Length: 62
Image (cartoon, rainbow, N blue to C red; front, side, top):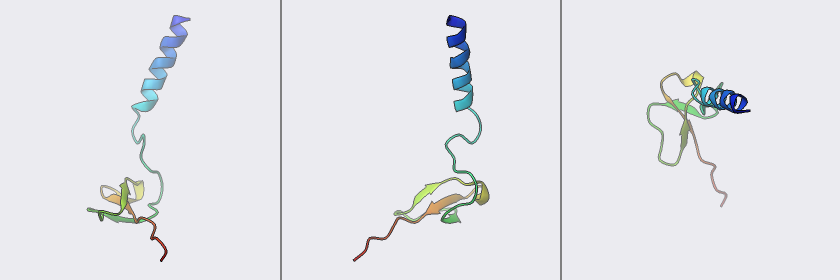
């Protein structure tokens, strides 16, 4: 039983350490920029390369 738990723990740690974990995949839903606006949410996207993927915050209706 200990062996199974150890194997599971190692696989879990390995999956968390893989490249790209927690990053957005595919196209950026906003715009690519080296600096995002203060109100934008930022992240990474493969399509932006080394720039940030800036997602404008939703505008509140009047």
